[in-house]
Image (cartoon, rainbow, N blue to C red; front, side, top):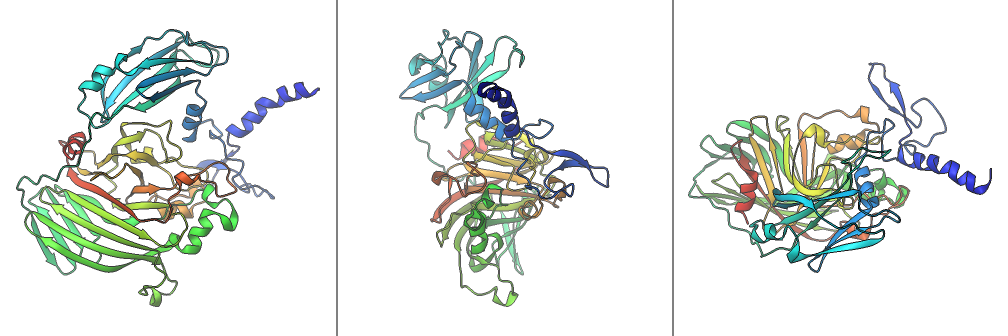
Length: 509
């Protein structure tokens, strides 16, 4: 076999080895089946999970990262610059004659219009430009009152091929259209709605007739529970969070890995000491609470836990509760040290019945700050069970990037709404039946045990997952979360089936 024949022979197998997870289906004693690998058959030596680093599972079910790979490889590229939409054909030999282009414009997540985009065939390695004011979507953009408008272009095959049927999307891209004016946040409108508040022991209860009720621990400022129309919604929270279940890439590099540095600093086991919690206002229109917390590594001995030495983070949080049921949380974080943080955000726990999630952000599949180009900004709906994408090695998962607002509701539509507020940038959102601690503990998917509630994270900043390799700390600088001061605001509101999430969001702009 000569060199050229050898290359041609091994090429498909090389591609196969990098794309597909190599695991074998193994039956457990209880009859359940799971993918087994790296020592699960008593085999030694082994390379643990390194044979499961592909883009699809052994049964060819796609991993979330496959969407990003398809986006990077897609042959039709679309960009917007200086008022010109540029469509580039990167094929070496094919024109675009066999392709159909479809455009759609969305304003604040709602479709404003869509049509087939008529284009002349674009030659290989050539581009076609559409001037802004002559574009077929220009009138929709010009008349839109939305704060954000996005153009999405999908490219489909007109005819079936040997590898796929007609209508298959071979390229899809989304560009944000220019903003027409600056939107500034509005002040919360209370409309004269009054509420009742009282302190019993260490508990502050705030309520508005039978519409909603919140209970907070006045020692810590944390929510004990939150009910909407008598339905339990939030079970505990809302508190700052800086730790994530480490991924395989986080552990790459041994002592130099992000995980090793986080663990050495104690970020994986933080204890928050309350430096102060004060009620600044308590009227029938506004309750305002200020909380100052100090985050430090949890001491092995409880006698040392009250010490204020070795403080890693200082967090100032202010809750403003209005008669409308709106809660505005203003957070100021001041870290010490110089290692990048896994995340900077909020954590809270919802009743299991709040399993229907709707959000305006990137999706519908899992995405992160450094893996989101394929995920379009839109309004999506999923159940919590569909948000979580299990991995061979559990770690941080179920994330959705660039979220503007999100709702968590039960089957009847009762729940809570959360959104960015007062100019804060979009959030990273995670929701899962599996707690951070559980995702950290388990080494195989089948070992995961569901919790008694839904753990939710809304992150102002979330470190990228990396992926250049898995044996060194290689997250690019722009996707790190340096130990710097951060400030952000989040709005929470009670909602029912008759509430429009889009209208709540528009009302604050």
